[in-house]
Structures are given as C-alpha cells and as structure tokens.
Length: 422
Image (tube, rainbow, N blue to C red; front, side, top):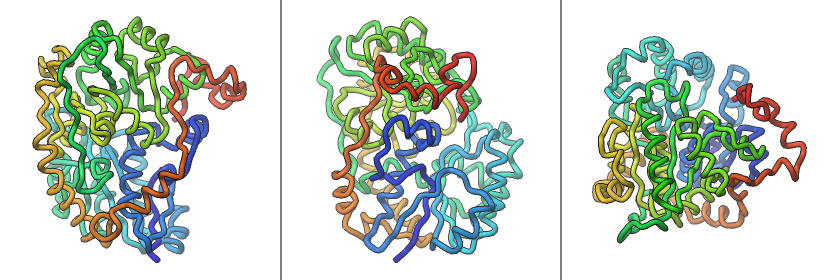
C-alpha cells in the first residue's frame, strides 16, 4: 500500500456543507483550488494507494508525522510564486528539508503581469530559489503551469523544470468533452460570468474595472446572465444574506450587482462536482477566472477566458483555451461575438498529448495514475456517485435567518466595515 499525503482542504468524496466549508476554509479561500486538488487526488487513486489530505499549511511541526506516516508528499499548487506568499515559501522550504520522503510539486506558477516582467518578483527571488531547491532535493523535477513560470525558474538557475499545465484540465485524463455548439444568441441565452477579485491577488492585473463594464452590458442585454463567484468571502456574504460587494465582484457596477443579487443570479459552489454539473447546463461562460472557465470546459460548455495577468495567460496558452487578454478591444464586443471567435480545435486535439506529458511527469517522480496504470477512474467515480454534495448557495437565500448562529461564526463578515479574516 502506497501512502500519499496531498495538500488539499478535503478529499473529493467527503461532503461538506456551505457553512462548514466557509468556516473551516476548505477551499483555501477559492473554490478553484478544489478543482485542481480533486483532479490530482482522482489521478492518484489507484487500488493500492491510501490518500490523506494535509490541509493548506506545511510547517516544521508536520515533518515527523509526514516522515512516519506517508511514502510521498504531493503538493498541488497554484500561483504561490508571488510576493505576499514569501514567508510561507520559506516555511515550506524549511519543512521539506526535514522530510525523508519524496515531495512532488504539481502545477506551481508565478504571478506577474501580462508582459511576464520578472523584475516584479525580485522581492521573493531568494525565497523561491530556496523552496525550489528544497523540492528538487526530494524529486526529479518540478511541475509548473506554463511557459512564464518555466522561463522564470530557469532564469533563477533551475533546469529540472517541466511544463505540465493545470491538473484540473486532466480531471478525466486524456478525455475532454467537445464544447456544445450555440446556433445563435438571443435574450434567453444562458450566460455565466466570472471576475477576479481586486486587491493583493490582482496586484499585477490590469483591466478588472473594464471587465466589470463588460459584465454590466451583458446583464443589460440578456435575461439569463448569472455571476458565479469563487472566493470564500463572497460565499460568506451570501450565507449571511448580505448584498454588499466583497472584493471579488467589486469591479462590477453596483446597480448591476444589485440587479443580479435580487434576481437570485449570484450562485456560489462549495464543491467542484456541483459546479461542473451546473455549468454543463449553461450555454456560454466567460470572464477572468481561469478555473471558472475550466469548470465549464469539463462540463462540455464553451468558455472564453479573459487573461489579465501571467497566471491566466500562460495556462490559456498551454492548454489552448480560447482567450484574449484584457487589453484586447474584443472584450468590448457582445458575448455572441466573443463566442464566434472562440476556436476549440487546438484545446481538443492537443489534450491527449498534454495529458501524456502530465502522466510522464508523475511517473518520473514515482507516481502512477489511474488513467494509464489503473481502472481509468471508475472506482473513484463510483465512490463519488454515492455522495450527495452540498447544493449551491444562491443570492437571496438569507440562510442566517433560519440558522441564527451562522452570523456568529463570521462576525467580521457581518460587519461591512471590517475585512473577513482569511
């Protein structure tokens, strides 16, 4: 039996309701994290594997437990190479150096601007070098999201770098459903939009205010536009029955946001399975959220990504997800025109090849996967089918009126003048 420990908030087949998810921060502040974490767990769920999760922290106090109880530590990561993550990179590096087991980093990325300006990352140069060096002492290579991160790490002197994309795209291994066709747009076309949060995570982003105006025009023209937030504080606001705009939808004009809120068209998910299934029933998805687009792709719904920084651009390029940058005049066009200019041929035709790269990366680092070495994920899916996952939280739910203690769990969120602790 191979014992694997994975960085994630919960195992995919563990049910958690919305309040528990928010209170325990099982999403790591963004449900998009769950998408790639769950994809990694599925890929590694062979019959002779025992998988546990470690949460999101990795500290020196974890080292002995990890050494005694697992055969490998698997770290599905995201945009961890960013200035505000410096101290955590340092702690992770110190902990990894104390480990006696292999450490496999899957899908880490840097975060800078659309021009891939690495000078913006100078403040974390030494922390990144320390972390990557520690990882490579415990593995054959480090798996990165795309061209930008690979170039960045090579500029720091590292050669054992492999571009593997985002594991979320390989939720079903070498298979990817072709997006459904839209014969024509009218007022009833079912459109889902998403937008990134202003603030630290968007420190190197451009154009989020412009994206907010794009959403406003779509809401004015189409009758069935919904906004799907991904962040924990947005979920908490919905749980509290609050229509205040958290950092995520802050770039959306207030009147547009209120219109969506009152119409019950703000929908937040706490599990990837319900998220994907919901988007599978929509006609078109677009916005700046990478995993908002990938969730649609996995559901067979056409999606278009508006890239606003290096992290979104490098992954869109690698997976050939239809995209434009926020700087493009095309984003001012009607959603129907954005759809018409979306070409999914490369995303589909190159998917099996990209999966093969991902599979070889895992194997070279001592990990097998269910798609090439097992049952294709059949046992995993059977286990998932037995779980009744928590439903989405929809604006206007006002859950706190039925469960008074919900407000007590999130006192800072209940007070619009103080930020939610994350």
